[in-house]
Image 1 (cartoon, rainbow, N blue to C red):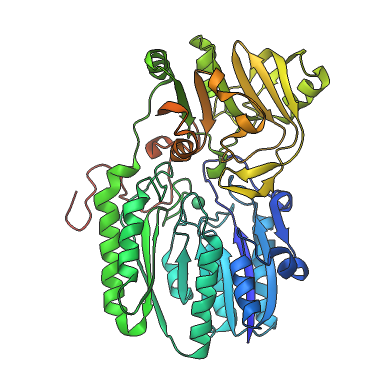
Image 2: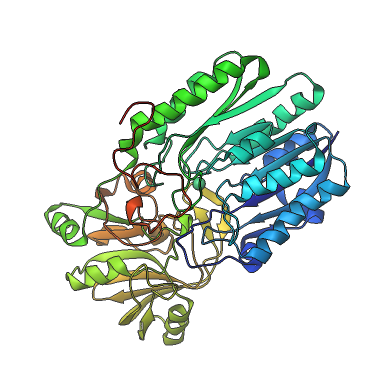
Length: 495
Ligand SMILES: [Zn+2]
């Protein structure tokens, strides 16, 4: 048994001006075939589940490339074509009995909006209909018909924050095993409601995805139903198929039931839709509420979320805090290597003067000239997130600068803001502030700060990950009508 294993993971925000090149993959994960097995064996984030299953079974592995970059804008044409060729070309020349791929599901290139569909069609064309392909996708994947018709099984993450990539890969490999043995013939089907959901409420343990996942688990109990994956979709990709979907993998004998389940899951998304949208609060109103609150308030800036393609250098909320005279706040994080360099030149305890933030584009607040005291300088890697302290990220140098009573955490590299307790990590006493400002998903803040923070407020901010999807910009490719971009949308007779 010889199995091909590869991965391509990126979430492409069509509204972001940051075009992604090969260097961005090299900075995060870009593993050549010859290093793939050793580097990703037991890896919880990507390929570990595939490789471990294959090695336990004594399979021979045909390693393909693995490329993974932090979410941003579309991938540059040449880089996309290169990685696609590294995934597809070996399969044209070498035989594999089965193929296991970890693909995000929301990859967008400068030219192609459904990149996973494009890659899978190319592979299918090269290998014919007989060889099984199993894929694993992010919960925020935008599933297309081309993906469904080319693969034999699709497995979506069941968790947000994402924590079960390994288990889903292992499960996909186990199904591939059965298919190659001839004991299962899978049927894969899907259904998409006309629904574009923001990521902000997609947490699977406390958010809007929780009941949806529970319903999927119930269906998975049925005889012949192998896997049910509800996908929240990724709202920042302007692709025909962006948005929620439900994929069902079943034994071929249960085709009819699989189609019914996909339709019922899609209807359930539709029924639950309002639970995904949040009310945002203008900064001024949030400050008034903070004044009346006995305790700490968290202000969440979901509009500049680097995990959804935001540049992480937005200044919109900081500017408003200063304008409104807020004087006890800590803010994480602004990505600005030039400003960090100035702070390091000035040294701890000294004043730094420079232009901060707003350097990637004009959509997240303007650059601002500030003079502030360098409170802390830090060098060294950080855990990737509060729930994955084993994997590290490199934020580059970090400077904490105090400007008018606001402590601002500035990083030299664009940093994953799922490291929510970065304040504590930098030995900042969060109890001394009235307001904590963070970028990213509000539910994650709720989980991490539930014992410390009184009020969690999603701020009415600006940017390419705005939880108000109607403010993202002009969608050109997405199927219409779709809620909430269009009003009065009905689905199966219901409004
Ligand atoms: Zn995701």
